[in-house]
Every structure is written in structure tokens, then in C-alpha cells.
Figure (cartoon, rainbow, N blue to C red):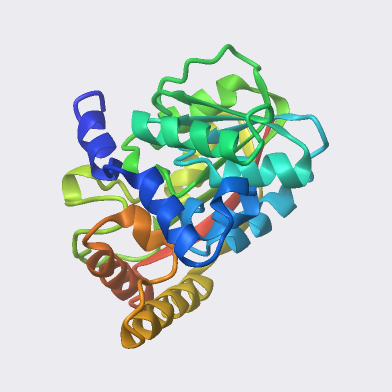
Length: 280
């Protein structure tokens, strides 16, 4: 994995990303001098379904205020800020891409949330945290870049306290079929490690987790991307810049990535799947 990680980090590294997000928000009339976390939701929730998906996942975790929560693959910090704001959690995010860690830290500062969130650079497969450090953990659209699901699960189990909840929301393979690249998480097949729900369940139970809930979200995903395409098309027709959205973080070939993913979703090959796991 160590040899792959720099390539995966580069795949996500977009120069000037924070400035582009702020400029896109300013274009839509947001007061960027007084940013609130909610202003960023269209751009900083980089997964299928955006903030609605985050909320539906986190609502199943029954989080208590002031718990310590780990966000694995925290990106530019959207879900971390959402959980800190809405559940009163103290959130630590870890991400492979240093520029994402820097942007997440900066955006939390801009939105007055520096005290509730912190972000560190590191690998999900070798986390720089002591055993039993966290009460709960989340991972949203990260496992597709992790070749070793068993290691992901054992590392998460190590840093969670007994009884801790781990909420997974990843794109998984539901049936055989060729994937067309690029995809949002991978330029080519060398950095894509999509696995089946069964692979995740097996890795989880081997690490000491029990599965308390599971839900495929294929129809939800197809509807989400239809709405994204409609917004992009409407903006183009009016000669406007597209509204801030996941495309900002996907870079220049966002349309191609979305089209390739949509084809796999509509073909029933891939779907995002939620798993709620409990340690012990």
C-alpha cells in the first residue's frame, strides 16, 4: 500500500482548491467573510448524496454529546464539521492527502469550528492514534482506495473503545461487470479497490465487529447524480458557472467521472452501501 498511497494522494490533490471553493460560494451570494459550516455543504461533502447522506448515516449511530469521533479519510472536513455541529462530538479527521488536511483545518477555522475539529495526515491502514482513543468512527467513500479491508477494520477496532460504533458508507460491488475509468476515486484500476458488502462484513467480523444494520443506496445514488447533472446543464444553458458541488473537488474531468460512475450504478454493478458496525 505504501507505494500506492502517493498516487492516490495525488489523484485527489487539486491546486488552489480552497480558493476555488470560496470563489464559487461568493459567486452564489454567500458572505464568505462570515462563513458558516452549512455554507460549505455543497462543496465539502465529497460523497454520493452529500450532506443528506451524511445525516442519514450519522442518525443511525445514536451519538452522545462530547463523544470523541474519528472520521477516516476526512477529505476537506465536511462530515467532521457536520457531526461536530449536529451531535456535539469532538471530531478528529485523518486523511492521506496533506492539502486536504490543510484545507479542512483552514475551513474549520473560517467557520469558527477550529475548537471542535482537528485534522491529521496519515493512512487509514496505520493510524497514528493510541488504542481505545475514540468512542465512534465514520468512513464515507474511502474504502474504494484501500486494498486491505481487513487492515482497515482491525485498525479501526484498535483505536475504538469496546462498544464503539463504526459507520461505513462506501461504494461497493454488487455484481460482476467491467468498470470504466476515470471514476471519482480512481484515475485507473491500479488505485481502485471496490469490494463487495460480503468482503466488508467478513473483514469486520474478523476484527471483532458485529453488523447491526446494512442498507444498499443504489436508487438514492442514481437520483442524486440525475439532480447533479440537471443543475450542471441548467447552469450551462444560462451561461452561468455551475453551482458549487462535488464536481469542484473532482477537477477538470468531473463530468466523465460522474458519467462512468452513473453507468455502473444504473447497471447495478456498483452501489453505495451503509453498514453500521459495533465493536464487541
